[in-house]
Length: 138
Image (tube, rainbow, N blue to C red; front, top):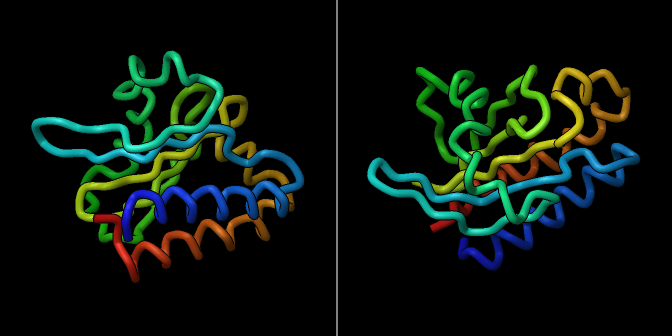
């Protein structure tokens, strides 16, 4: 999958999630390419456009703890149940070095999951992960 198609797939899936959740589920997301030596932001949408890059390593720390020791395949996902505020709540591995990080800047995953609408809103997230498993972001 190319970057433009990946971005479209993410926007569509998150839009479906918002509809099913009946409010914004993730109000911030970032597509990144992570490598040992360098990384690159591929796309961002959210309320912190001017500041998210400065805090990015800090903001993904709770997810890194959850991912530690896992060998995530393309299409695998992870949640950080107690990540609050600017810390990212969820991620999907989109390709060999590409990831999607999602965040609700006012709620943790524990709070999000407490809403009964979370059950139906998960489906587009899982479908998005499967889409990238079948056609990884290159």
